[in-house]
Length: 394
Image: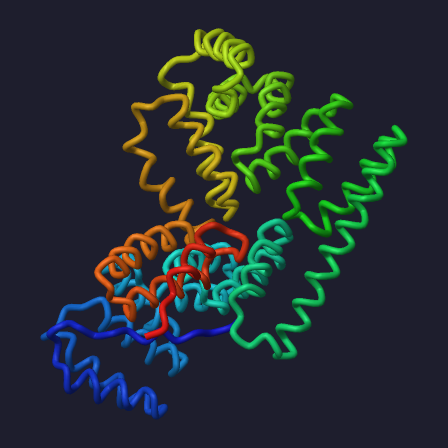
């Protein structure tokens, strides 16, 4: 698998000279000597950074058990912003535990989303498990963040993903023509093939879900509409159909949750709003405080399967069904959001810090935050345009 070294700024009060000497030895490839210096400090220093460095030395010396022990100790001391997750994922992958590896790598991705190695590791691991939606999702992130866009490996992956996208779009257009001709069988065949090739397309997932819904094939409709929801959780078209699919399948709590999600989108349409409120109230009468438990079980199962998009959806359902459980689930919901879209959190922090520094005319430091936003955001986003407009030559 791809590897990546993180270099930590050591601002702790542990023996600075030994730390620097050990780092120099590590850079020179003298891992045993570096390890001995780090181990000398264990009894006098207590730092997650120290155990991280010890783990790296063991990793380079191919002593994976001791490397894993050191990295786990590091994580126990500091669970957030810890680069040990990358190596823990690599170790798990080496023993062919792809589920455990993915679990660690998504945490590494949450810390450093633009690490191309982590994105590539996740993409290939999901691919080997047959989870194409997640695989393409991370391959696209790898293509975005890869620094060497002229390497043979990058160009090979870019060519493959481009072919997937083009084939998916061609099949989608074929389906649209078939729909116009009311040839729904051909449309569904084309879209099913397209969804397998290009599973991260909202348009493909939505249209396929919609056609299955209209044909009353509700299980298939549910699968694709939920995937479309994961790609755009604010889509009125998706949320308008999902409740009725779930009602047909007897999932009344799921239908209720979708209707609650739909309410903010119809605030300006009084008739539609009152209609949904009436349906929500009718469904609510059949629930109690334990109605969320089934969704909690689904959320936990999806989490174990590394399907974090669906896990997040179900944990949010738990809170919709029982708001009193918000404190119990807020932590894991925040984690799942950071697994799926860590860029959102980091961009928000960078906007706040960059704007503050810009306001006091510390343009040099502000530029660092605005530049980071431009790396993490999409070029057509308001965040990208704002950050670009604030860059100052200093």
